[in-house]
Amino acid sequence: MPAKNPVADFSAYPAEREITLTRVFDAPRALVFNAWTDPALLKAWWGPKHFTNPVCEVDARVGGAWHIVMRAPDGTEFPCGGVYREFVPPERLVFTNNSVDKQGRPMIDGLTTVTFAEQGSKTKLTLQTRGVARVDYAAAFLVGMEMGWTQSLDRLAQQLPQS
Amino acid sequence: MNLDAAFAALADPTRRAILARLASGDASVSELCEPFAMTQPAISKHLKVLERASLISRGRNAQRRPRHLEPAPLKEIADWVDHYRRFWTESLDHLDEYLKELQTKEKKRARKKSRR
Image 1: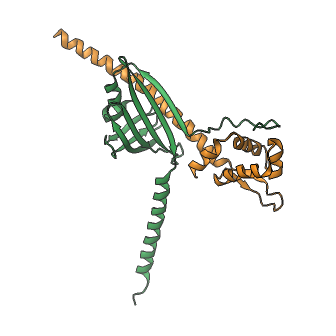
Image 2 (image 1 turned 90 degrees about the vertical axis):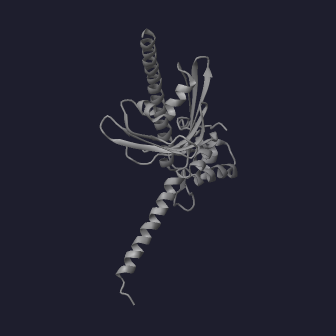
Image 3 (image 1 turned 45 degrees about the vertical axis):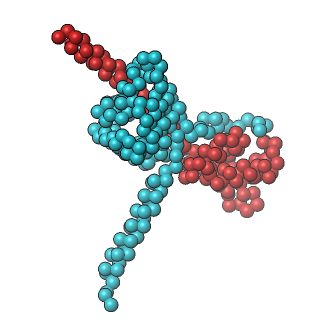
């Protein structure tokens, strides 16, 4: 429904929770796929400009975890990681990725799907990241609160005179 | 923040327009009906969706109950999209350079071997 009055442009705000990027790499599919799952290769390219990855651990299988610590040029470290949901070499990878922003606050989690398609001697990569709710954080927070309470109650119980 | 609700709320152009209107100041339901040429129940329905997504809140004034834009969830979504787009774009740039480098090394090694 068009508005009668001119209103501020809200199209700048994303209505979609998905980001899709496509790239064609001049490399065979098996190599491109390996670059995502072999930690020795993965640590060489993962992350923004001028970042290094002092920690890169990959348990490449469905249900396996990946964990990378990125180091910014100023030395600040940004841990990120997730779990593989699908692992189909050399075609398809689906994994969760959680990360923190510059202030160290957890960002919205992402569910990332990467597909690798052969295009002659080249490889077409399609990456789709979808925002998912931070269920894990909320659960961890609640568990932490509960544990905090239990410990406080334990301490309190110890301080109380035994009857 | 309920991400599903926030994205569902933002998917509708009328609701985005309502948010845009509220960005320029609080407004009551009847004030919102006017620019959108919509009935009050129709607007109320959209407002409910926005409220459930924590994108707007209601003012205290009992008669007008002006709706107020809550920018925090919008900022979080916009930040997320920015952050991930930049992260992946730069990572894929690196991957491209790295694959070229790997293959150049591989070719050199193959040439050395064939010379032997």
